[in-house]
Length: 174
Image (tube, rainbow, N blue to C red):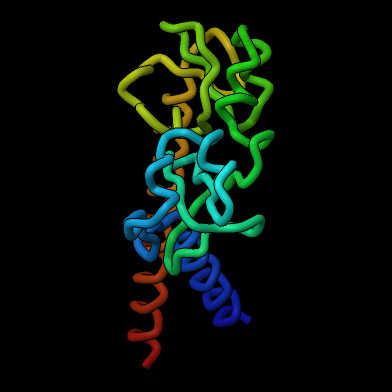
């Protein structure tokens, strides 16, 4: 029973690390007819065989399912004009309205609603250092992101310590 619990813990931990790792992803897109529409979702999706990766601001070959480039990872995919986040987000002129949209960030300094998520704006991070996600006022979400990362790092350290203790226990028993 104890070995099964340890095995389950290791499997879950590896899955957790894989879920937060982008090492197997590529954002290198070979030249094609779509790339000339990078950073413009609306123009990109009007072209047959192209789709827009919101989180990288890239127009790449793809369809309704997603990108057609092996190894290319895209979290927020658009292939129709009504799914372009620029138009979805820009239609909201207040922090309250913008923060209700999961794929939008409110930029305090420019009073603009822009595509983004829990880690900030998807493109041009330098244009807005005071972004908000999912709430207005109070502390910025960036502080939550830092604490969120600290939780995962702490969990990883705890897992490593538990595995070392388990290995020591096995060595002592044999």
